[in-house]
Amino acid sequence: MSAKSDQSVILRDKQLRLVRRSRSALWQVHYKIGSAKKWYRKSSGTADLSDAKQLAEDLFHEARVLEKRGLSVVSKKFKAIAEVVCANFKADVKAGTGKKSYADYYRAIDTYLIPFFGKHNIDNITPALMSEFHRWRTELVGYELKASTQNNHNAALNAIFDYAIEKGELHESQRPSTKNTGAMGEARGIFSTDELIELQQFIQKWMKATDKSKSQMMRELLGLYITFVACTGVRPGTETKELKWKHIEFIQKPSMRVIHITLPQGKRGTRTLIARNELWPLLDKLRELQPEFKDLTLEELITKKTDAHIFRLADGTMPYNLIHTFADCLIAAGMSKGDKDGKDRSLYSLRHYYATQRILEGVSFGQLANQMGTSVLMIERHYSHLKPLMIAEQLAGEIPNAKTSESEEIRRYMQASPVRSDVLSLVGVTTGVYLPLAEANTKATQELKNELNQALSKAA
View (cartoon, rainbow, N blue to C red):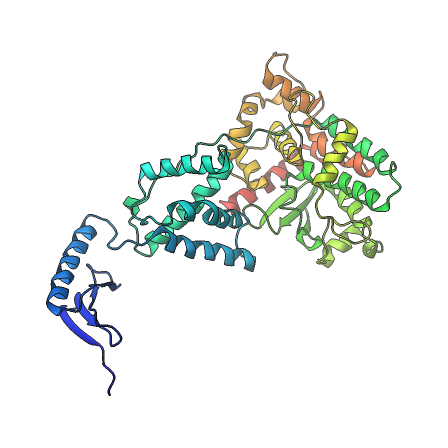
């Protein structure tokens, strides 16, 4: 017996046809709308040709109306589209080509978005449904998620909507508006320069307070790590974990040397920051911790572009993380909370310290945002209260007498000393090596600002 062949009936040339596959008795409607090249397919649900023709015409006319109104012609379930987007995020993370935030996005899709929106059509997610999602999510976890977490959920949602629009499953006019009902994360406890110097002096004694060689190595590395973060503003952990010697470059300027550091991974992928010349003794101390580099100068090591990690213990092993060691250190030093604000301190307090010092030094919000790998909006949100107080007298070390919280914060950070001495002081007490303050030279200071401006222009 011969096999049945496919059948096709043209209803509108290059626009509408019926097709019956050899393996099925039912007619399938194939149609195009407007100038679109894509053929849409839908089963007629009938084997009767006359009924199939009528259904095809009805479907075609309905699709044309939707297209003219700027609506999607067909509708797919949210789950089908979300699973594709989720798989793409996972593949990018596994290949190392995606941003770190992609992992947060696919977890949000798997844990929250598909379970709630999965059964709904992608083009039928209404404002009421979005509000219901917020209530459902809060009941699920038992509390209101923080604003930063909700931002990740919204970013994942918008990625799904973007993909649906790209594939013609959703029209831009149908994109639901996302909202964020979470509270902003509470600011971390702050440090002043004097407190960080006090902490470094404590660490020198703390290293000798244990007989365990591993603990001694961890404490020594922690001291260097604290000053590195405080003097560069990098994100602790995310931007230091994969930092290697090959990612550092020295660039000699007429009156100073600039250190370029390329951070291989972070919240927004690879980025480059500029560090001041005073940081080199700290880098040299990190070199000394690694026995295989003891016969090299720092310049030779930097030129060699070796693939070895910078933050390693003296025995060559990588610390899992320094979070717990830092917390233990603060407890032992009695510095777990800010003595003025009473807030818990963390490694991110060092990044906050860096930002405040640079603002008081006169670095613009745009320069600082580029240097720290964040947005100007984020800098303004956290540090705009300092801007009106950035006057020449303050940068010279004179503090206003006004009894305001802003003046108190400036006193806390500056301690009646020029802001530009913070890097020199911290590196000096950490390494025992003190350099002349090149930034006291107006020409050198201007060169550094020009370097930051050039980096900002390239990033724009």
